[in-house]
Length: 269
Ligand SMILES: Cc1cc2nc3c(=O)[nH]c(=O)nc-3n(C[C@H](O)[C@H](O)[C@H](O)COP(=O)(O)O)c2cc1C
Image 1 (cartoon, rainbow, N blue to C red):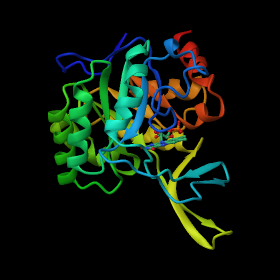
Image 2 (image 1 turned 45 degrees about the vertical axis):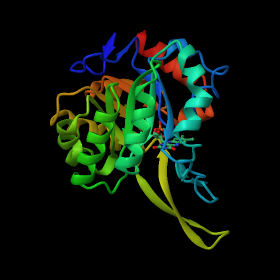
Image 3 (image 1 turned 135 degrees about the horizontal axis):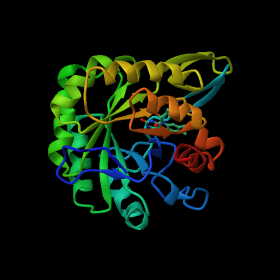
């Protein structure tokens, strides 16, 4: 068993270290027939914000050499509707449910945290921090999440600033850290004759995350979740070797829903 929040009064215990990352898994119902959920350590649902968000203007997805650029814009129907739609599925989930709250503002985080706090089926909250978060904003947003919700709080750090921000996140109340949100990039969109900015996905992300994991591991003692560039069991093992207690997988799952259970099985073996 893996304890992701050893200093929290309730804790967040996982039977194995593999879970989907925020965004690709939807609200918890979409993949239920495609994945053997009981073989995972947890599911991460969301992102959610206080108000509904339509998401980014197309094109949202562009192919690049070695991967893709994706710009979702955090599309979601707002926390109240999310809870109405998904609470039943969360209650029936055979593994802990972690709700990913996008850290767009302390007010939004407080509202989402208050909604989620009342739901027994939610075992943890993952707070995603924007890339340009300042130390003051981090403190305010993490504090908002940790006071609004009673569940353990995982803070997902932006990749480029994971080492810089990790100690402040723990000081502000994070029980665990996800390392990290995907790197940002821009791609020339020839058909529209403009650049599209977004997050980069592909196998090249793994070495960047491993390096960030090592830096963060040397600075803080809380449990870490590795996220970014995991496509097979060796990638997940590398993350655990760099000090992560668990791993998240997104883009690989999108292409092959069975990969999560396969990685979980491989790690157990
Ligand atoms: C289809 C898809 C949608 C995603 N949507 C979001 C999102 O809305 N918010 C977010 O913070 N991350 C989102 N992510 C990023 C993942 O949470 C994760 O950080 C990223 O995919 C890195 O892991 P990977 O290399 O295993 O894909 C999304 C990823 C995918 C593949």
